[in-house]
Structure formats: C-alpha cells, structure tokens
Length: 597
Image (cartoon, rainbow, N blue to C red; front, side, top):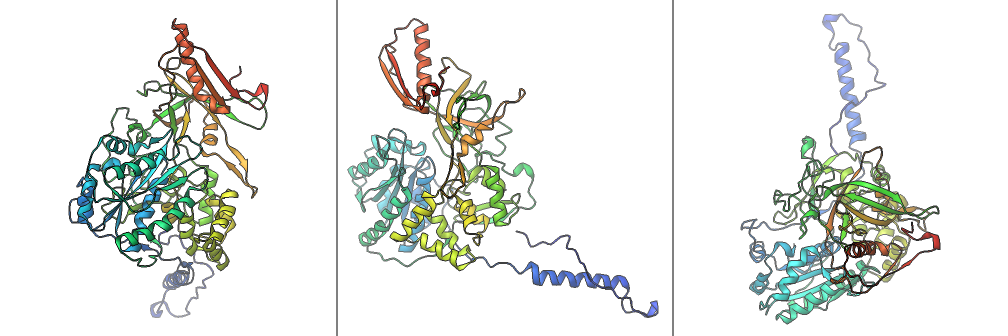
C-alpha cells in the first residue's frame, strides 16, 4: 500500500572506467556507480512502480459538519444541527437490520433528503414526538425479531417504551421494514408490533410494512420493498429523485505504519486487550465514544469471557457425520445461567480462506489499517475494531463464508479488469428479473462465498479496504445450553453438529463455528479458550415440578431438554414431586442417538 521502495536491486548496469589521469577525471568510478544506481532506480520507478492497474475512484459520502455538540444525547438536535430529515432506527441481532438501515440512509441522498442511522438503545425515543419540528421528516425502522417473537437486545428498551408509553406521535411520518424467519411461530412479530403501535400513538404510515424472510431470500425481499418505498416517499412529500449518486464510500482508510503493538486489535470484540486482561465486573464502562462498541442489554456481549474448553468429544461413533459435546469451564467467571438459556460463541474464520483472499488480492495481510467513518457525528466511528491487520479483520470481524449480498457485488463491478467479468457482475446485480435469477442461481444455489467469486472471476481485484468495508460482520453463533447449573454449576455444555458439505461447484463448504470448535480440544492439560457469553431465554420448564412435560427434540434439538431432564432428576432426588417427563427424540439409526450411553 505504501509508495516507499526499499532494497531495489540494480543489475546489468555497465560501469566504464575513463582512461584519463586521476586528477583530470570528471567522474570517478564511485560517481559512475552512484549515477548508474540512480538511473536504474528511475527506470524502475517510471516503468514498473508507477505502472499500476488503474483502480476506480469512489466518492466519499459527503456530510455536513454538525454545529452543535457531538455528545448531545438528543437525536432531534443532531438532526437539526446537521440539517437531516431522515432517521433510520434498527433493531439488529446479527447485523442484517443494521446493514439495511445504512442502505436506506444512503438512499435518501438520491431524493434530496439527508439520513442518519441510529441505535434505539442510544436514543431517548420519547423525542420522536418532536420529529414534526423538522420539515419533511421521516422515521424509518428496520426491526428484526429474535427467538420466539422477542425484540433484539438493542431494541428491548424501545419495545418496553412502546408498550408502556402514551407519547402523542401525531405528525410523525414513519415506515417499517421487518426482518424475521417464517419457520418460527411468531414471524416478524417485532416489526409488526412496531408498525401497529406507532400508528396507535398517532403516527402516519407513509408506506406499507415490509416483510423480510430469512428462510428464503431476505435481501430480495428488502430490495423489492425498497424499490416501491422510495417512489411512495417522493409522492408523499412532493419531492423528486435527483438521480443515481453512484458508488459512495462510507469509510476512509488509513494505513498505520508506526503504531505500538499494544494499540492494535488482534481479535478483541470491543475493549482493546480484553483477551489478555479479562474484566469480570457486571458493567464495563471503560469504552470511550471514539471506540467501536457493541451495545447490548447483556454486557458480556462486549466483554465475553475466554472460557477454557474442559471437554470436547465426538458423540457419533463411526460414519461420516460429526456431532460434538463441548463443556466450557466457567469457574470463577461470575457467569450465571439457567437450563434453556443460549450461549454465544465468537468464532474465527478458516485461515486457509483468509490466506487465499490475500493472495488473490495481492496484498500483505499483516498491514495495519483503520477504517474511519467520514461522518464525524456518526455514533459508529469504525465498522469493526480498528486499528487492526487485514488478517485480523478477515479472521475475526468479517463474514467471508456466507454468500455475498447484491450490494457488495454491485460495488465490485468497477474493479473487474476484463469486460466480460464486468458485464457479468453488472447483469447479476441489476434490479431485473434476469438479474435476480442469475444472482439466485450463481450465488445462492451454488453457495459461492467471496473467495469463490474471486476465484471464478479472476480479473476481479477490489481494493481490500473497500472489501472490508462492504463485507458483513462475523456474528456470534448461539447454541442451546445442554446442561443445568443444578448439576453442572461450573460448566456450560453444548451439543453441536459439525457442518460440512459439497457445493454444486465441487467446493467444500464448512460451518465457521463448529469446524473451529472441533479443533479446540484439551491436550496434555492445556485447555484452549473460547470467547463466550450467555443470553437469557424465555424457554423454561414449568414452575411446578409436578407438571407433566412432553419434550420433542429430533437431532440436536434435544440439547435444551438434556438440561431440563437434569433439573427434574435433581428435583426427584431432593424428594420433590415430579410429573411425567417424556422425551421424543429422532435419529437416523437405533444406535445413532445422541447421549445413548
């Protein structure tokens, strides 16, 4: 990335000695050697160093500086001071809703409006009633549903405010896009509730509720809704589209050449050095506003515990399938859990994939860099912990295994050096029936990740910092806890199937977390450590132990029930009346059931 040149060899440069008396020579042998080296350097510089593939120039997002205080907690004041009239709130657990919120805020530029993204956990939502003080103001909500119809962690306070509040939202214009999964009973419950409740409080809906289904193609659902949404906004406010703004970069890159090692992130989730200096207090207040933070009602989310792996054993005896029983040691961690809760694991990407991406893009993965939001008033200064190396970003912070979204591929078009690759990408990312079908066939059905795209389109050479800006964040993986603290108070157990399969292109696709966990085995008394935290669940046994229970859990679906059975066993052992406890489990063969022994 640097223009500095070191150790440039100069070869095949003839040095001719001038046959003249020493005192009359214009140039000595040393002079000629120096001149030859300079000439060689000039040739290298002019014809090789500067002969670089032209890269497309992307515009930076232009934002107006805010006149008021940056730390002003009022989002209305921030909007007024920065002359913005669109605010996009998000309730996000895996990052998708946050990503969609950012895209809507960017879209607003094309319609003569100015948007900002906001985390509801960082805002005083009662201020929504003041939104009508701003001309042509619009509040958008990208709300994901988590678990059994629950709000995401960062939208919990917002949900409670909507339930208990009676704020008059007359004059507030709003629209909602909901994110969920149809395989769950309470499909898009949070988005539906927000849409309904805002209207009940007097708000005016400018466009119908959007519904995204993660079991199908949630991005296509979003794009289809968005294409109809903005024309409706134009009609409602009497504004016109100002045209395509082209590719706009949200972050600027800085290469950090002389930075102390202790200032560089190496995989920590939020607090620098947290992996070497564990803090086990309830609240972690040492994060400054200039740092990347993950907001959550569960503070362990931003300060996970590095749990030693006590046990890691295979449950399947023989065959080509793998299911792991893993026990995390939580002795002295202050972590508390209940049967039915979830444990989150922060995984690391396959090093082979990371290395291959570096080779494809011809970059030094150990280069230290920082991505900084060009919007100085944005609450998120960096897309992930910075500064760090490209290797760390691709290993710990970015999702390199899931199929890339249309938006990312659209931004990649200009980086294709061959016209056929450029045309192919442009066709696949076009908002046409043909483009959507091509994306579905070539990306989704063929299970291509970003490395597969780079391999199959060899002329595609994006700038790695731009790719890091666009790739989605690597999310924690949640597992049902398969133990009870009544039996195992110093450990948390999980039951996890190792995911591995062949794609239509002949590539081997592996689950990120389970394949990483598979390697975390205790060896000669050394216990590898894994970053974890516990997320509370509403999935519980009946309060009265004498209530009969029927549990149905095929495959690893039996995981939480293992903890429930342990609890009932303890209750019976302690002399409490225990109702009938029946478990129906499924397996492919009689001898293939989990925990049969």
